View 1: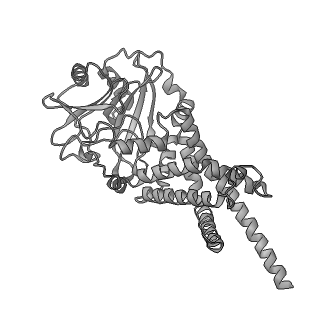
View 2: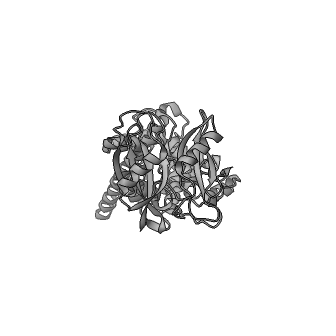
Length: 400
């Protein structure tokens, strides 16, 4: 590569890098900062709502129906039961989820009430509409920037922009004389901001690129699956999620999946199930004696309403899901709901969110959320200073 071509490319990548940083500053900062905070969402939830986790012990001593009755007393007729979640680990409460009657969120998505219950005693520890919590506000900010309809796609294109910024930043950082080890030193320039920008940018470049691309995959699921040749699970068979997660437009909480052909994505639970939750629980336990039950979801409106039971075996990820047909009690494997989609999508979300990845990667994600804020601010200041110097030179030349 000739010196003139290398110089022109460097100028081009500098302009691209600069205008991505300056042009997208207002969007990138809240997107990155919210992602960093959400890595610790479970700890944040326990810190801000400690009363919901003030359990008296780990033992699940009561029947499923007893927990549901305790929750229904707390609902006071404002909601209808959709899901029972049992503790994932010692110290967790039982959680009962219900759909608020006559109220919907953005895009017609249902709004849910959660009730946290002490496992040994059945005492209600807390009740809340989780869609209005600070954590879910952060989910909506990070998932869609509160932009109706197209917010998720906007976030996806911002992910592409961030990846391009990483690639151009690495090109600009790379020493032209090939002395990479020397380039790792702090004093690459006379300005502290310049050195800080280059040092942070280099060390966070690769993790930030990974987070950007996984965010793109999540934002454009259909295109991404087609690119990887992945067949998505049947959306008509989607079961409620084990944990609250932000979907398109920021919907959170248990998703009211269809109970079969004819039931919509947000189909409501049926009014009078034929089976009781205790009977469903016993049938599932008998069918999977080597697994533990983690959640039971009520049957929803459709051609063949069915209960859905998530079960987990040691070392198994994700949980498996069984359908128990409400009319007959027949047990079927739920092929469309057993893990929240295809394996690649699960891995992409796990890498992006940091779920069950360990402290090291979660810390890297937090740094990957904080770094763009620092890089954007330092880059903007450097650009303003450079612009001021050029204007000063232009004025001096004009006066001369």
